[in-house]
Length: 140
Image (cartoon, rainbow, N blue to C red):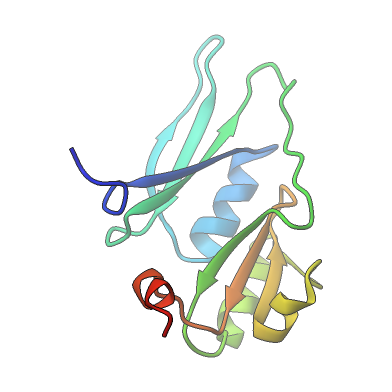
């Protein structure tokens, strides 16, 4: 059994429109489509996106009843630490693919990155800083 540190992480959230969300995360950010399931009677449709070398993936679901809708707050963030400047072409691609650049709810993220809202209202932060859990825990 893997330890929590090596276990795969899935971030699941509902979507209003899997096609629009797919364009943003796949075509805009550059994630790979890992799996897609188109609903049959009473099932949820889903789209899984990620990177082949990552130990996480994003799962977007569509409720067949339409009762479950995304309800993100301005502080529901997926932060990607780039460790350098946010490429202008990446921002332009995200906007072409349905994203909207927005001011961050927490000004910290405007200082250290760029916030883009996806078609469902969830926010992606492209952070210019680096992050390393082991280094943070060691106090360096």
